[in-house]
Amino acid sequence: MKNEEHLHQVQFVQRVRHLRHDLLMFAIPNGGLRHHTVAAQLKAEGQYAGIPDIHVARATRKYHGLYLEFKTKKGRTSAAQDKVIEKLRLEGYCVRVVRSADEGWNALMEYLEE
Image (cartoon, rainbow, N blue to C red; front, side, top):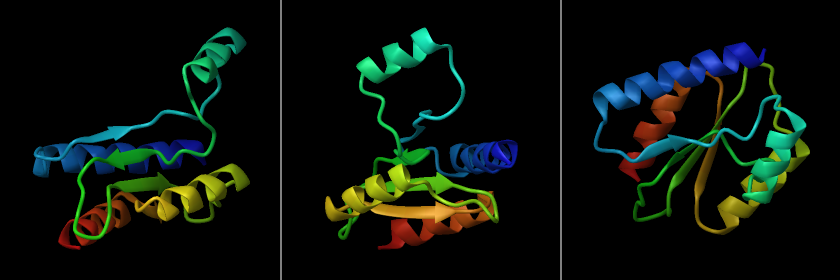
């Protein structure tokens, strides 16, 4: 399942980098298995559970920026993700949970039109 999320996210990033190279967009790699020493270092550096996968640092008239969380068709956000998503929305960010590269692209295009 995680591999499917990964593939959708990679396809999305490749499309954006090819067609919209004007955007400052980056991944936030919070998940995944790591050696306990590395995990402790990342946590000490500020890694925070529940942060969405992708951030687009482009403000619109309505939002400060866009966050995208990639999930499989049946995937669900965790409790930590739900809390972070709510906090981000309260702070004026647009957050979308998407289930494919195309859905991510459509969310991005809709966001940029706002």
